[in-house]
Amino acid sequence: MRPVFGIVTVAGVATLVAACSTHRTDAAGSVTVFAAASLTSTFTELGSRFEQDHPGTSVRFNFAGSADLVSQLAQGAPADVFASADKDTMARAARAGLLAGQPADLATNTLTIVTTPGNPTGIETFADLARPGAQVVVCAPQVPCGAATEKAERAAGVTLAPVSEESAVTDVLGKITSGQADAGLVYVTDATGAGSDVTAIPFPESSGAANRYPIAVLDGSANSGAAREFVDLVTGPQGREVLAAAGFAAP
Image (cartoon, rainbow, N blue to C red):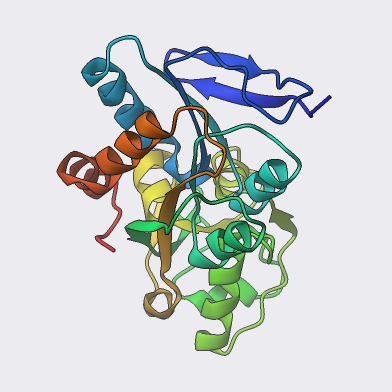
């Protein structure tokens, strides 16, 4: 049997159970999208729009760290579309033979520092994250936001000593909003979505660590037509509008 992976539907939460064969057994009209955790709110909204424009078609999501998603796909998890938080992870999917064609860029995203509301520890610069005693949380190096963090470290000439390295940017944000750390590095879009639950502190070194997000239809998709239409929605005017409102920049 293939592994069982959690799938988030537009309406709520469902569980995707894969069959033992190499073919999808999902009901006709469904589109399963594996997407980077930082795309959760925007893709959920776009999934709702897609369902409204395509009566009888349902969109199901699996949101997680991009590296974890590629591992799931390589292990046989059935899906129709993959959206990564960086091009390197998408290239890994391509080398594994998982893609049906060339990826399309959908947006770019940059890092920002977030602290608990009011910034009680007085973090003002990237270098402040390396102060003795600073409780800092970042993404693990193999995750796109972790790779971007390493680029920022090199640009700033600063080496961080995080108390935790997370597998998804949403986990970093969760450590800050729950008060488990002083500061963290997340995408601008995550800080925007968190609103007053965090204080965001931009830093100039982030400009050289922007991540470009690609999206692609997956090889072996049982609903490739609808999958391509979903990609078209995300990369088209409606998708750009929703992504821009969340803080993403154009690719």
